Image (cartoon, rainbow, N blue to C red; front, side):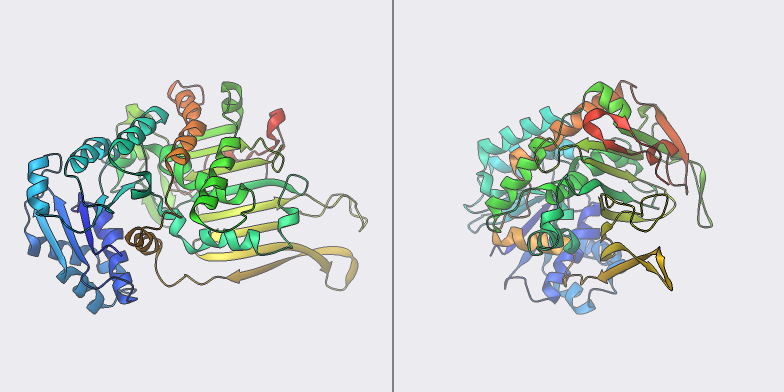
Length: 472
């Protein structure tokens, strides 16, 4: 297991909010190798003590889940070196003589990935070293392809980790067990029995504090292009003949390749974009997105995105997959919902079909629920709704900690492969282009609402582009 982690861009939010708490949790669980050390590199005018104080202050919100002793032990093995990471000589001097493999973690804006990769590659890292890039991997298909070419020139693919922290979430990993270890579900997991699938990540959070990053990214790039498409791949992929790195990533790529690239007509009918305006969440007044510090209204950045996709294969032909995410909404809703088709016969004398069964996988908090129909109490000829649910364990360590442990041990199972990253952009790119051209209106919704009303529609038969009635 690798014993040295070098964080490039260590003064940023990613390091203090996610990486360092994850490392402390691994230390607390006694999963770090003996002699593990962290070197933070950034341009800020700090020394090691100042960097440690900065991290300690920022890690306070994680204090309930991290023992003080574990946090202090990790900080004691953390160093800081001021360096311009684009300067090869400065970087070489900061790292010193390198003889053992290390992890070079690019905790940087995507715009700095390419020049930093070139600089790091020129140092000729010790054999077995790993390079980690956070999402988003590129800004469109061409940039992702160019970045992949640059990486392939200097690093073997097995040493490159493209990170999506959703894949480290326990509930996301539970999708595999739910699908492939339960005979009761797999025979129903297809177009014959499934009506549609919702993949939702709604947040009450606004973009306050992150507007400078978010305004250049938007909801479609920030969430759907990576996180939600990863969930779609896990929900929709074919069964594995065995659970290993190659089999899992091959099946995910197969599914993404089957996702239809939408035409301009389909984009107009099957996508919704919006931006939150002034409103209130609970009793908290929210300013309009365009009034947030760091936002350029001329960019017309969306804070809400909904895309209905079709998977053109035998298993899922005609089943809509609705991917939805938004900021400043009425409630947090982070789930995958499998909506099954209704029963074919009205047995109980009712005028309408009973509500269909829904299997819900909640991602935060971790929960699995199943909605079923039963007889109403005391009435043989009436129906009632029952909710079966189970809370799931957290798995002991947070998502980032699981992913870091995989990186240190060289396990790529939960890393995004080069072709997988490109397939995600192939799906999203025509939508981005249509939105940029104004082909789909940018709708405004009040903060604290359920989002644009237009987003309530669903398409039952995506391949026919036939919208169904609005969903309640």
